[in-house]
Structure formats: structure tokens, C-alpha cells
Image (cartoon, rainbow, N blue to C red; front, top):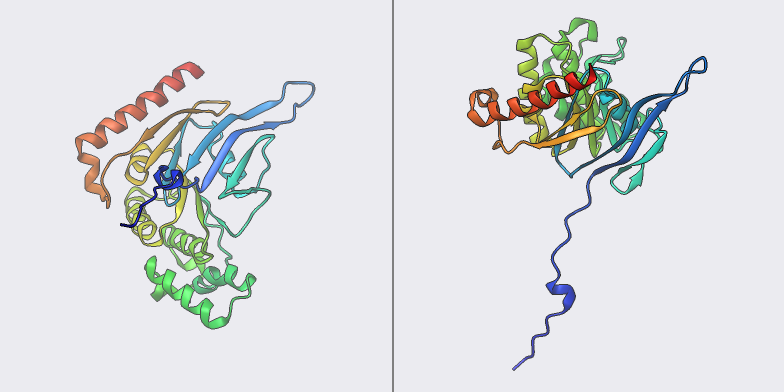
Length: 275
């Protein structure tokens, strides 16, 4: 009979994978003016985002939601604290993080195809590989027929589709989105939410998404991080246990309504405290 030896290492529970994004005790201060006190925009913010998680941030106006996203993108530097993308400290912008802004930030002199291809050219990928990637993401966002159009020939929703395709074409590990649908009308916004859910499920990216729309936060997110009023802190993290895939019909479900009431209450409490 062969003896079977079970080692301590074999019996040890598997460790969960490290978060894809780790924000630890991050503060952001702006210098004082004319002898006044320094302006504290963010105060000891900590949050983790798991690999392939869709994390959402909501909070009162001016609480630092967008500032936190800019810090994560490496477009600003925190006064204190640390941000890790994977296990690498964020020290500036990088190809591992893609950013989609509320404004479309497209190059107006480039076609849709050339806008999506722009980052791939900077990376000096071969032409055939660039072409395949661009065609794939134009198909994903439904813009293949508009590939040769200029941005001024597109609607607002179509411009934002181009911006999303351009960000995804660079294959970032983390997609950062700063109220990307905030300037769109209600019908276009709903269409873009459905598009984003489908593209995210296909691309399997980690997303950190800022919005002021609570319905949008619940529809899209796995967890919603509710921030306090100025200075910005994490007030509470609300898990969204709604099944996926999701569509707009879910907004009528009792659990969706319960979650909306919970988040609204947190925000209303924060607004009263700020008065």
C-alpha cells in the first residue's frame, strides 16, 4: 500500500486573488490661498476593486469622485496614500489603465477608425494587427458602417461609443469612466448603458465608474461606493446582488427599488449633514 502524505500546504485554504485595483488611505489637498487653510478634496479614501469587477462611485457634487478617478488614472498625484494597479504603484498614466471622460475627447480631424487606432499606432503594432483590433471593437460598439466618418458627423451617443472603443482597443486591465453618459439624453443614455453592459461582459475588464445617477449605478455595478460630501470619504459600500446579465426591466424589481432607497437614504443623510 502506498502511503499518502497530506502536507500542511495542501490543506491550507486557497488565498483569494489580490485586487486588481487597491486604493489605500488616499488624500488629496490643494494649497491654501492668501493665508487660508488648505483645501482637502479627498480624505483617507480606501477601496479595493477585484479583477473583472464593475465598481461604481456615487456621491454629492464636489465630493471628489472625479478627482479619485484622475488619481487612479495617474493624471494627478495624491498628497498622501497609495494606489496600486495590480501590484504596481501608480506613478503616472499607463497602458494598463484606460480612461473614458464625460466629454468625448476625440481628435476632430481623424476618422472614427483612426481615432480608435490612435493608441495602437503609438504602440507600433503591425498594421494587420491594428486593423483586426479596430474592426473588432467597431463591431462591438456597432459603428463599422461609420468607420470613415469624422466626429462632427456623429451624434453624442455615437461619439461616446468611439471613445469606449478607443479605450478598449488598447486592451487596458482597468477601465476608468468619469460620468461617460452624463451629457446624453435619457433614451440614448439607456441605450449606452445596455451597450456598456454587453461590451463589459464580453471584454471581461475591471471597471471603476463614476456617476451621479443612482439607477445607473445599480444597473451597472457589482458594488456601489457611496462617498461623503466635502471632503470626500467612503461612507458605505453597497453590494448589488442582482443577477447578470441585466437589462432595463430590472429597474422595476423589488430588490432594485430596495437598493435605490438604501443609496438615496445614504446620500440624503450626507446632504443634511453638509448643510
